[in-house]
Amino acid sequence: MKSTEDDTLKFTYGGHGEEWFASVFGGVGYTRDLAQDNATITARIDGSFDWFSPYGPEPGGVFPEGNKFDYRGGVGGSVEVSQILNPTTWVKAGYGISWRTGDLLTPWNSVPFLCDPDVTVCLGRIQEKFPRTRLRQTVSGLIAHYVPRTKSTLRASYRFYADDYDVRAHTLLAEIYQSVTERAYINAHYRAQHQSAVYFWTTNLGLLDFNPSEPRTSDSDLARFWAHEWGVKVSFHLTPPGRTHQHQADVYFNRYTRTNNLSVNVASIGYGYNF
Image (cartoon, rainbow, N blue to C red; front, side, top):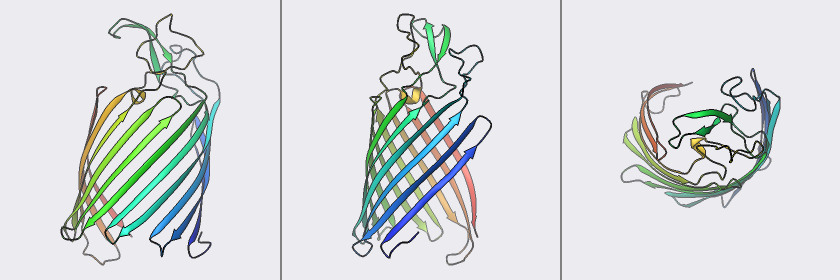
């Protein structure tokens, strides 16, 4: 909603429902254009509320079974500032904060219990447990530069993440968009990420370590690791420039690896039609 020539309000709201899970969300954002639209300030506030029936990976094999009704919800805010420095360079910086409460675990995740030293044989598994609140903050920055002579766009960004679970994460992303012809361009990227583990992460709970009321997880996404990702995408405009209706196709490959024994290769072929 355009309230004035330089001010814009944007409202979002919605809901979702399925067999064991339902959610509602909403938010409001304000954008102010400055310096003949060469600079922009955006602020947002968003909230959501979910209710669901948690469950474990195996009935009777998880303690507790977790068949009760539960909820989670939270609010978040962000501020973002962007500035055109010159005809070919643009920068952006942002800060975000969010607070969540409720059942924040993943219901089907579990923690090995009473295992041998190599964690190959375990007496059982126990459902993971999280603190009932979580505070998260992010700081980010981006710079984009266009090189007219080669028709290239270079982008570099950095993001710092911190929460009250003792996670500290640094992410660096570099991208290049290269025009090959009027109807084709190549996009290549590389991303490096390092994060620390949540303070309650473990690979094996011993009998003396186990306290049913204390948080616990063995989720590899919450462990300490280095991650590396690179990818290439080739896009084609199949319709001559200037046509109202555009046919597009792309070929994409992405490889993701990290130091806690995870690697993923993704390849795709896509087709799209704008009408």
